[in-house]
Image (cartoon, rainbow over all chains, first blue to last red):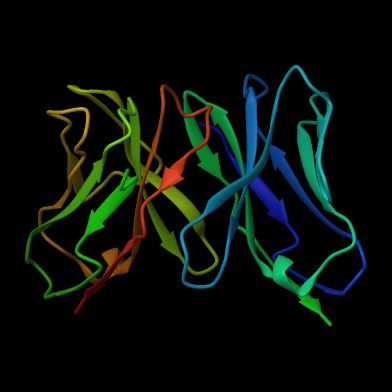
Amino acid sequence: GENVEQHPSTLSVQEGDSAVIKCTYSDSASNYFPWYKQELGKRPQLIIDIRSNVGEKKDQRIAVTLNKTAKHFSLHITETQPEDSAVYFCAAYIQKLVFGTGTRLLVSP
Amino acid sequence: NAGVTQTPKFQVLKTGQSMTLQCAQDMNHEYMSWYRQDPGMGLRLIHYSVGAGITDQGEVPNGYNVSRSTTEDFPLRLLSAAPSQTSVYFCASSYSAGRETQYFGPGTRLLVL
C-alpha cells in the first residue's frame, strides 16, 4: 500500500522567514496530494491541495510543488506569522487517503 | 449545517469493554472515514466507506468494526478495548471520494485503562 514520509518532524523559524516541509510517497499511481493544518486541540483542516496533472499551486503565502518523477511534494510558506504555528500533515491518495506523520511548525515573533 | 459531529468527546474504558464511537454528517457526503491520531504517528486510516453499504479497511483496522447503513452515519465499534487503542479518533467525510476536501469532526479522546 501507499506509504508517505514527511520531514522534518519539527521546524522552528523566525517570523517573516520561509518554511518548507517535504513529503515523499511510494505509489506512483497516487493522484491527489492535500496538506492539512491542525492547531492545538483542534481538528485538521485543508489548507491547499494539488492533483497529479499540476506541478505547482499557490494560494497567497502558501504554495505546493509536486515532482511526480521523484515522487515527492513540498509545502512552502512564505512570510511566516505566529498564527502559522501548528502541525502540518501531507497526504497522498490512491483509492484511500494516507497521511504523513506530521510537522510541528513553530514561528517565533 | 452541523457538518461532521462525533460523540462522545471523551471516554474512559476498561480493558475488554466494548463501545461505539458515533459519527454523523449532514452534508450528503458519500465518502466517510475514521482515523486515529497518536503522538508522532500522524493520522492513520482505520476504515473508510465510499457509500452506504460499502466499507473497506485502512492501514490499522484490527480491533475495529464499522458499518454504513445510511449515508449520514458511520459508527466505529471497539469490540474488546485494549490499552493500545488509547488515542484520539477523528471521523471525516467528503463529497464523493477521498481525493476531495476532507471535513473532520471534532474528535473523540479515548482512554483505555
